[in-house]
Image (cartoon, rainbow over all chains, first blue to last red):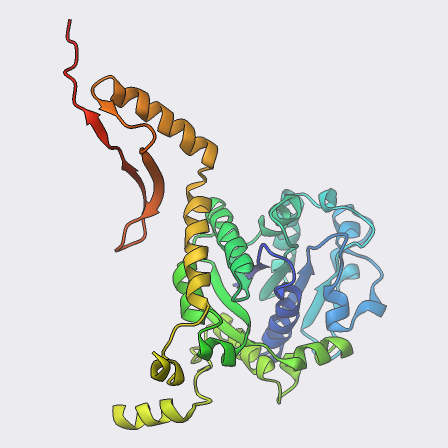
Length: 263
Length: 89
């Protein structure tokens, strides 16, 4: 059975597009058929993060306007045969796709794909409403900053109001050193405040910048810590039980000492 | 305190962040603006004034949360100046 999952955050710049690219690729690596929909009409970006910007012919607005068939607009990934991108239109505005058109589009895509991931635009206006309309599940991305968590809380409230009752949390760009010093909210802190279930945690990682420069998602890089985190999250989405990365396992002297006594 | 700090036990700025965040979220979630709270305060003052004399200056009203499950509660502290008998006539 296919699932339509929206990846959203409220605040911009917390990693929605990066997460979408990585989770889509991660699910394809597990052998699933995945389509990524870039719902950020007017500010197209998922194509460049995936390194597919040169292959775009048609976009989502062409599809809903009937200028082409869905299959003509889908761009196959460079590495994975089962991963496709439906790009956003760059020159149209947010109202170019209606919620009903989004629902119809996803119904069509369900015939061919296991996972339909929707990369939501920032904000809570019409573009957001269009992007969440077809989803039955939601992943809320946030960083451990007050502004991002506040916006995530607002988005969770809006998701509830359209019937997505159990959105899952991904805490992105966590700096373990700062969490240890007590200068950054931890995964548990954020999960407690937002009162939602945890899907995963992604450490701040330079490899994200490097992989985005190259247009190759970090999940493809075995040495990337963030890539590992996204691989784990992909497995959890697919129903596997994977332990959370223990962000405290880079133990200092005192925790080693404490653990010795605990055991 | 220094030794606790050294051991990394002292809380950093994240607790400030959490407290501030909890405060804004109470208001965000209640969808309750300062204006609305002010109107409510005025109405409550009017109603209670029919029964007793209260101190409008000291009337304190805010949205807080319960300690156990974080449910929003309307908290009001209304100092009574004088309990006057209601005129039943």
